[in-house]
Image (cartoon, rainbow, N blue to C red; front, side):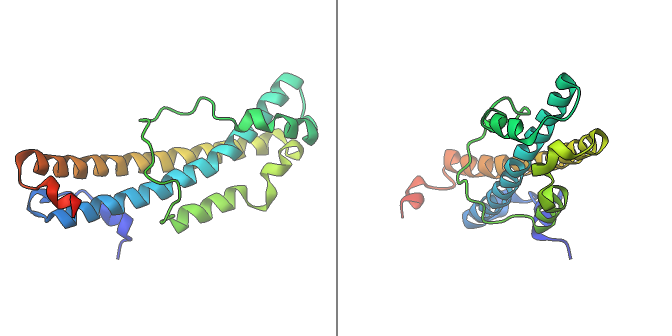
Length: 177
């Protein structure tokens, strides 16, 4: 049996929205938001290590060799500061605390960065560091793609709710109860 989030990503998930109850549409949207929040959390958890690994590769390119750990630690505030990120749609999270985190993706991230490998980037050979960067980049891209799929569902569900309020099928007064 597929996992709930797999069902939410199935092409049939949004079928017959117009015939579903308001409670069902609200619940569907809330479920999608919960999964997307967990994915957002995982994406933020990979960005720090990816930034550190990427910076170490730049340091080596500029300096010709791995520099010491202390100088990398001195650079951490700048490395981890909110700077340019991959393009996104700029959505604000409804909550920063995830309630649902995909256990398989979480385990995969742990397998990539577990064992303190990010803390040892100055001692890792260039080839292994590039492989680590590639794994982190791939993970971040897959999580981002999955988030986009949930954004599409959230948008469709929100559009259906908005349509119902606009057409009078649903009353704003019901929200105030």
